[in-house]
Every structure is written in C-alpha cells, then in structure tokens.
Image (cartoon, rainbow, N blue to C red; front, side, top):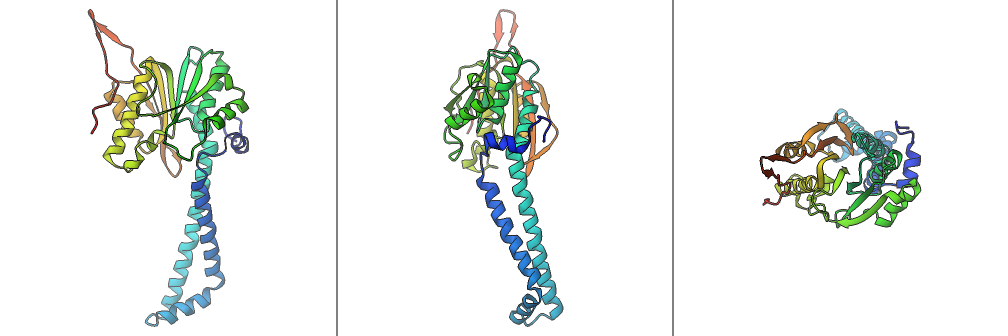
Length: 299
C-alpha cells in the first residue's frame, strides 16, 4: 500500500492497465525460460552427453561447463524477465498512482484553479487525481483530459476514461476530448495548470525514439504546453528518459521555478518529475515584452 492509502488491487480494479501486452509478453517468455532452465536441471547428464556427441572435439569437462553455463544463463534470463514484467505492472498501477499524487501536490493552491489540462490522459489516473484535488479544495474548476489522436492506437476510449471518473465520484469535474498534442486545440494562456504523466516521450516514436525528428516533436509538445499555460500557471510533467531535454528547453523558454525530482525507476528506465512556472508578462515602458512560446521552426 502506498502513501495514498490505496493498494494496487483497488487501483487496478478501477483503472486496469494502459498497456497489458508488454508485461504479458514478458511473463510468457519468463515462464518459457523457467521451464527451459528446469529442463536443463533435470536432464543435465543427457544434455552433457549430447553436447559431447555433437561436438566430439571437446572433452567431458568442457561439455559439462557448456551445459551448466547455458542452463545458468537460461535461469538468470527467466529471473530478469519476471522482474521486468513485475516492474511494468507496478509502474502501470501502483507507481503511476503514487506519482500522480506527488504531481498534484506540486501545485500549491488548487482552490484558485479554474482550468487544468491532463495531456495524454490514458485511463485517467492523473486526470482523476487532479479532479479529486479540485473537489477537495472546493474549487469550481474543471480538468480536461486530452486523448491524443492516433498516439495510442490500443489505448482506452474516452468513455472508459469518463467511467473511471464516475467511479471516483468526480465526473462533474472531468471532460475529455481528442486532439494532437503537437498542435493543442486550445487558445493561448488558457489553463492554470497543465500536467502529463509518461506520455510526452511517446510523441514522435514513428521517427525512431532517439532520432532528431522525434526530439523535435517532443520539444514541439513542450512548447505547446507552455503556450496554453496562463502567465503564472504551473506545468508538471512526469516522463521517462528525456527529462534532461525538457529541462534544457524550459530554461530556453525562460520558465521559472524549474524543479526536477529524484530519479525513479519506471518501466525499467529512469524517470523524473519536472515542474515549472510560466513567468508573468512584463512591461517595459509603453511596450509589452511578449514571448513566443511556439516551437514551429523545426526541420
């Protein structure tokens, strides 16, 4: 049970998993390698005999070493695959919930929030965490969950996301809509708070996760997040691997109060929460200094 007071069975009963294929795939292979390692253990002597029979140039000692080494690697692979499957399940359920609570706690005052956005809302763990915080603070605000068009082909439907809001008792605080995260369908300075959990890194994967084009797409999404934030608004992003890129870009965009959490292992890689505040517009004499948050000049 996490700090939020919920155990994984309660969370899973409401939200399920965004991507169950990966842990299932890992689990199937873990079972296969486990069975193979047991086979090596039970039939070690016959395997040594067959190894020496098909490789007559090696002696019995080397044959036993090869069979033992292969069996050990097989057993170790099974352990690693079981661990990976467990980590994916934990990251998708318990860790996702706990990180959502940490993200909403990054915003100091929810009572004054009128409009919030969850970018890549998935099944609604973070979306509903924001809605519950709005309800708890007595705010009359609402949170919009953006379902990225085509970004998650096997992702949950809007109806299932709204169903989870109903189960949490916050349906009146939640709306969902489709949209492209690279060109958000909202006007400038629209939201008081923008949050996103383990989503931004998925944008641009069609170009190859490590390609310059994918990096440019992620930066475009980040620029859109800044664009739709009101002056003085707060952004909170939990993501995998690429957070240092986000921090650098946020500094380039002159964001304030940029904070990065400690490293948390999620989905077998490093992850961090980065939070920031969009600065207020300043005036210099009679001329307003305007900053362009868009990130359109990309190759």
